[in-house]
Length: 335
Image (cartoon, rainbow, N blue to C red):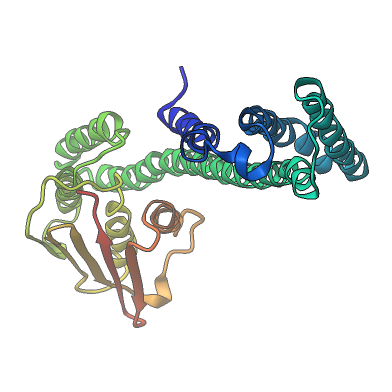
């Protein structure tokens, strides 16, 4: 069954051709007196012209002109023009013998097909352009979905890599916090597995996930780190791309703890209606910055996802003073 847009297109065609065929018959019923041609001549001639429109738009132009057979296309159009003229003269002589045609009549008989043939070309050009834009839009959407799937597939391995590093650290210390940390990690992984695959992800869920991650890190570092998490405002009806904020916090823990004295991490989340303001700042030792291959994977992933999903709707500032690294993200949420 044709889509709604197809039915709309059919309706426009019927409206235009119906107006062309019947309005002249209603309002110009004395056309025979003013032109010297039979009144029903215009009705049947326009039916023929409409057929020329579709033949040109759907067959001649796309199969000949667009395939570098323009010479054959022009030759056929010339033959159609000449054939149409003489065919109309023949029919008039058959049905109205003895009718004398003036120069004005000859122009009425000869020139109308040109307008319909040109209209067919213009219609085809517009139709092809619309179709091209539609396909490009669909291709962009398909590429977007594929790329997002790929980027999301990278989230879990990157997260697991960092968390396993934390677990190894607790195991080496033979810490009593290892078991509760593993239980907390199990909850986070369950959350990732069953929730982050949703197309719509509540901002409240993302904040809850972030808080759980921070609590897990607190089990590891205890009071050795000045850790602050501030959450202001609330709009639980808004949505956000899953695990969009956590990589920034991961990066702060990765580079800001264990390499500097008196480490601190400050996280601030503020929501006002559909606007999210998010910032993370931490101190670090530039001379002892980790250079492992996984460094930066999470941040690059987030940048790509922001550009794909929120073009023109976000502002990301990364500021490095040499000892303090600050991330500020302003984002328009989907509500």
